Amino acid sequence: MARIAILGAGVVGRRTAIALRTRDTSDSIAAFGGDMLPGELPNEIVLLSHTRPSKPWGDVEVGRGWPHPAATDANIVVLATESAHQPALAKQLLRGGTHVVTTADNPDDIDRLWALDPVARESGATLVVGAAYSPGVSTLLASYLARGLDSVTTISTAQFGTGGPACAREHHRAMGSAATEVHHGSLRASRGGSGRELVWFPDPVGAADCYRAALADPFLLHQAFPSVDRIESRQAATRRDRLTARLPMLRPPHAEGLIGAVWAEVRGVVNGKVEHRAMAATAAQATGAAAMAAAFCRELGGERGIRTGAQSAATCENVMPLLQYISNDVRLWAYDGSQIVTTPSDNRPIHAARKWQIASENVV
Image (cartoon, rainbow, N blue to C red):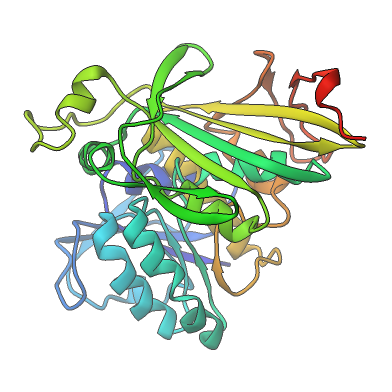
């Protein structure tokens, strides 16, 4: 039986606990409230009952103090704190041989987490980097599509919406910071807020103008597909978002964004012909992030062959179990507008409708 501890009782942390608890699982789960830095005491500890309750949270036992048996006995820890806290916490946990699932989305923090790969390998633990909505669900869709082509030339992702207050602040910061993308197979910096592109998300989002921003998708996808010539990511934004991106936030962030979506497209060659394929997902940002984190907990708890060291949704070789798990809380869509329904017993490839194919572009 896996013992899972969730550090951070914000929107994503709470939803992760609920997602794990409401599935058929015998795992025991502990959720720690309040962000903390190494050496600080958590504000609150909530220990969920070991049996599956009738209500999502079940009976709770409140305690204080760090370290606490609920965490020290855990073999999987989900970090649902603000991104900046996660690299130091992950390093501390990895040294003890604990599997760590991180929900960071800040590119600088993603870089610092990925650099912990030697620490994780030495201790025989797995570090999941960027198990959120974007990166996370977005890079999972892109990876699935890319693995269905003989060769890939371009990978593109886009995201719409924000989660809780920390996510809203990160969205604001990202629009005013330099973007990272892959050009001619190498990472390079680009101006945030540039590169306007109209992306068609599934309803209820629809069409939205998206721009370059400081997003982690290109870095993580580059680790999985280093030979791809171009990898880019966009973030939906309004004119006001762009104008105020380099200023302090003019008003406090909302409690949660209720509408969210991610989109992924790959271009490459199949059987000598050029193909473009696209998929998307819709759910509130916090719900999507929680579903992704919970899916990795399930895979790690079941010892399903995820390699030790730093991993991400993009580097996982068997993505079908992850897609099937997140589809309980996230709607998956093919480009033609049809919703994708997955079942645990169905291992057939997911249908991602062909976007277009031009005869003159065929490769001889």
